[in-house]
Image (cartoon, rainbow, N blue to C red):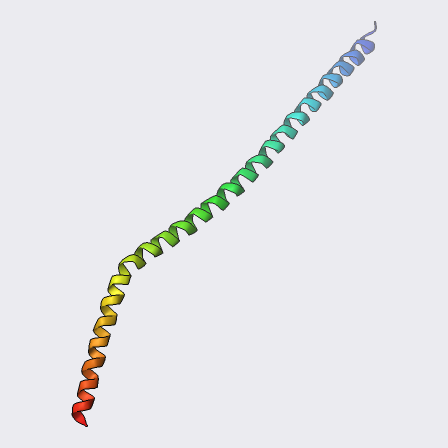
Length: 95
């Protein structure tokens, strides 16, 4: 074979290897893209769950803060009623 024919065969072989490598890399890229998409979906799902849990935590904290308040509210209402009665007595005395 002539030198030109050998060089041409080498170029063709290298070109074929590059085409095969390109196909393999494209397949790998497709797999990575699919994995990326599934991870994005998982992240969105986790973010949604995190927000729901934060909201539940906020509600629980609010409920706990109101548990003690019911006794305080009752005491405050009783004090207000006592003051209203005293004011009524004072009004009666002023007449």
